[in-house]
Structures are given as C-alpha cells and as structure tokens.
Amino acid sequence: MKMITLLLGMLSPLSFVSAAQPDPGHTANVQAVRQTVQQTPDRFTAFDTMNGVSLNDTKQEVLAHKGKPLKVTPDPFTGCSAYVYQDAAVVLCDGIVDYVHVGAAAGKMQINGSWIPLSKYRVADALGQPQFRAEDGDVYLRGHHAVKVYTDPETGRLAGVDFFDQASE
Image 1 (cartoon, one colour):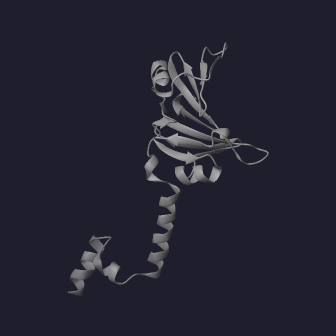
Image 2 (cartoon, one colour):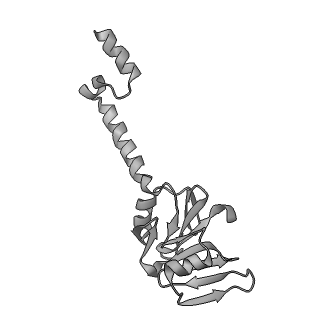
Image 3 (cartoon, rainbow, N blue to C red):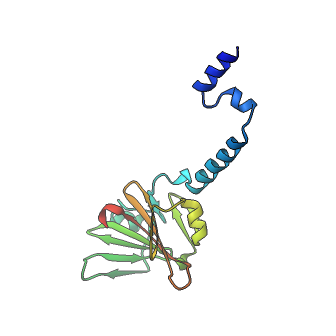
C-alpha cells in the first residue's frame, strides 16, 4: 500500500499525501508563489483601452466615446493632433489613435474598464512588475500594447501615464 501511495504522490503534484503531511518548506514556497501572483495581477493580461479609448479607434470613434474635446492642438511637424479632454489627451495621427496620455492631475486612470488611482504604488499594485525600468519611469507590456508610467525625477511622484502600441515606438 505504501508503494502505491508513493507512486501516486510522484504522479500527482497535488497528492493527498502532501496535503495530509505539510512540509515546512512547502509553506514558504506557497507564500513566495502568492507574492509573485500578487505582483503580476492576471486581470490585466492585455491593455485594450485607457480611459475608454482603444489604440484602434478612429477620430469618429473617439468623438463618439469622449465627446467634444476641450481643445485640439495640432502638431505641425508630425501632422498629428492632440484631442484634450479633462481626463486624458488622445493623440490622433492620420485619423487613428496613436497614444493616450493621462496626466497626474486626473487623479485616476481607467484600463480595460477598471479604475486605478494615479499613485506609483497603486499603479504598481494593479499592473505588477514592470518589464522595463527607465530613468523617467516604468514600462508595462501586454502583447503589442504598452503603458509607461512617468515619474517626476525631483519628487519621485507619478507624473503621468502613456498608453501606446510598442511597435510604433
């Protein structure tokens, strides 16, 4: 009978034998795995929208979602235009969203319909470990889309967030 139990234990990582006799080292491993899971939340396996705007949206779709902007600022060098709203600036190039910027003054951002307060710690808690750290902030990647969280070098506080297609950068 012990031989059968041993074989079952080797074949099944979640065997009743290990559950019945917990190993002290196993508890430490479970805690490490839980911390890793908490650092990489699965609710953001993709970045689809920021503040209700997709990177695939056209000018007409942005206007339908967000309404009339507070102002439109054209860039004569790139031919792009920033549609400035109270909660975000949506930059359109050739009639398609190029990127979305949310300034720290907005106080919060919305990713895939979930609101996140704009503080370094709340964003890091929501998005997990960044894939890249730069002098001016952290970059989070999900597929071809990226979110960059800019940090003020003097205060260390969150300065703003950009949502963009990493292939275009």
